[in-house]
Length: 374
Image 1 (cartoon, rainbow, N blue to C red):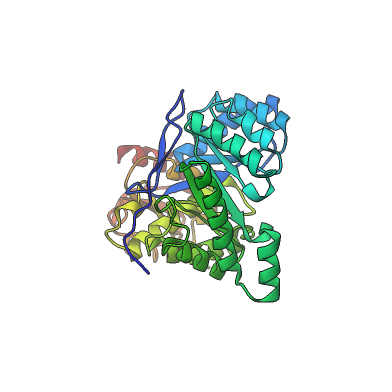
Image 2 (image 1 turned 90 degrees about the horizontal axis):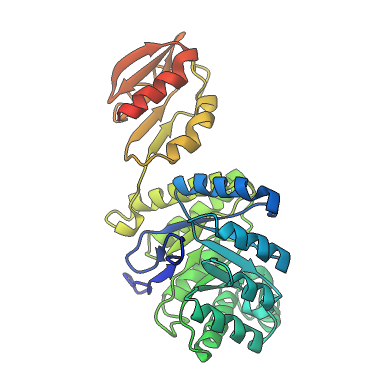
């Protein structure tokens, strides 16, 4: 496999009030998530506030399912309220994609195989080109073209090979129309198919207009624990090989946990592929003990209250949340700030040195005070 290849850079947003995000090339890996519910006009203010919150946690791009024209109209209004680039995920009806591009929606995701035929794809690409709007070619193992699905079922083609061939077809289709402003994703619900398909593509398959940026992830990965495990196995393997430009950790869980998992997966890959600047870690590094019968401090409850706030901080620090004096200052002495139980008291420590002894009732307020000093 060829190592060190760089994809071309795609710019998402950067028009109107939309913050630009650059994917590919030497740019850091971008974390995405997907909105979990349907949108309503009455819920737009809350949605805008939530998008701001997850943006502070490290999300660079958010995708919305757009099943009909009414949804496109509502999403268009939301896009006018936020600075984070919004991607519209569209299947079956090309008119929805066309309507979305009347608004400051920064990216379109289509599966050209189900959008309604060559002429309809052409209309989508022409409007995207006029607005400098990137399009993601999204190929899923569950929605392969019928001829490729038949070959997979017959055993003459692997799922990974079929994913790449499906992507190749769509890239060639885009090339016919002179459209090069695209990304590619080839997703499966299995770890092996996800890794192999993206390795095939990265090695040169589908290299029509230069190496396209890759959106990677295990689709339909499951609930929190299973989904994080499966995505970690696939994404760390790919990222450490230089494969992938943007990720989504697909979970049957919250957007916040998808973002946290994405950040930690990138951090894990960075530890393995030391020196890869695209995997550089930013923000708070949280370490915490799992808790046991020795604990005298509720690490689970404390972590639950502080997790989102810590990940939203723009500080390159390590924070330790420990349950007892065994796992407290000694084992976490490298932490810039730590909190731990010690009998009926709670200790605040910095780099192994205790700075305050307090009660459990004071823990949150005092922790916040010490955090602000860093």
